[in-house]
Image 1 (cartoon, rainbow, N blue to C red):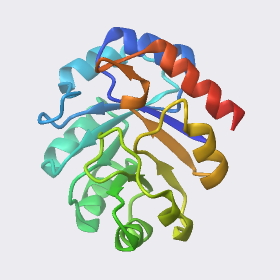
Image 2: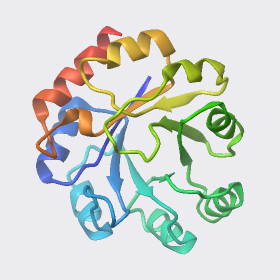
Image 3: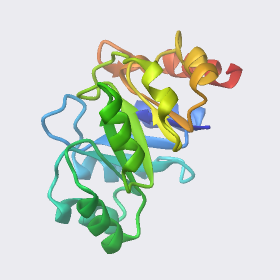
Image 4: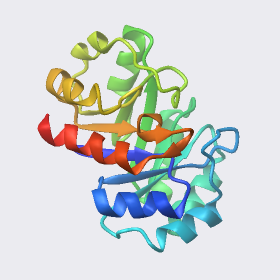
Length: 199
């Protein structure tokens, strides 16, 4: 199962993920979000990042040209889309870069599950509406999804083991659940990984 730690911002965050080795490290490239980092900061931070850990840039309705440039320049490895980006948008980014695309869907009901199911993205993330809220959603809705998905939304060391056992997702994605006072907490990160290994 793949693990994504999202919202990396500091040198200490990189040191923590180098120790714990999640598969993916997420960086928020939407300037309206509190965990936003600039492309320059990502470029600097990834110099110290274990090269086996892929860098995911998280966007919300960004211009295609911006996403494409960051992928081609090697600032990020994978684009994660959190807005209303269409399948045509995904196709264009993929054709211009050859990169993998992750599309996030806020799950309110069955219609959102169907949209996730039919997306042309390489992978989908199922999340609480709005994303980055730290709250869970009705996991029962996920019993109808057939494709592999990454589970996000309110995961932490206290519920991730149950989530993995009950839902058997392809991966999990965590941000606020491994933070204290808005910053990544190495002890919470270690505890989260320990619970996944138990599940």
